Length: 285
Image (cartoon, rainbow, N blue to C red):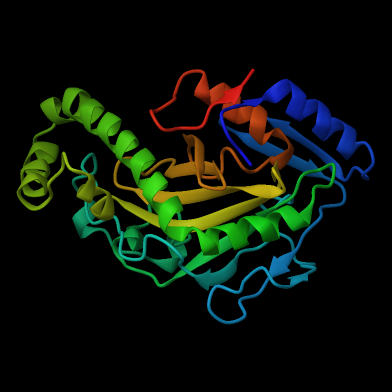
């Protein structure tokens, strides 16, 4: 069981020992916020929905890998297991957001800035991420199975982290954006009239879950998961929350913490050095 905190030195040593027995398929150059990938022989897979939430029961090779990131699969579609009704109804720093309309020619509906964030969706993209050294795909299956069985707890813990992010974003907005822009001030009056902005229920009108990423690395025989949100607070980066089982580890921009699965632990530890909220699970040094 996962409890207390993990010592990253012991984890990394065990992971290196395991990976030495597996073939290398390329390398990843990793930054805390930007992940750039080079891979000679990407390991790709795709999963297909089979009934209600039965996504991970069968792995099939995906020969058409994602050209933008060779260490991830093309997305598969699954029924959304959590955050069914949450959308980005308002975007406080962006007064033109209410008038914006989604156009397929201008990008993906799941991009951080997409106006499609206003619309509810019953399905969600699920993307598998593969380490260069060759991870364990059984961890991905275990992660999805855990999500199915513990969806309410996972959503509750994600909501705690989202509200912490929301509260910090609100403070920055009131201090830095609102005083100097009349269009934003006008838009803000509308938002205040319709949304209890200082309460947790505001989450459902400022965040939309659009993707779940599952890594082939993890702890306790269960892979790491990344929950990717569009948010009204940041149309440039969106928001990603990395979890292990029901434990929140860290947050960053969309895909920042999961695109290099072999480096998730070190990336999480780095983020926790400057951004750690009450209730997060600490990765030890």
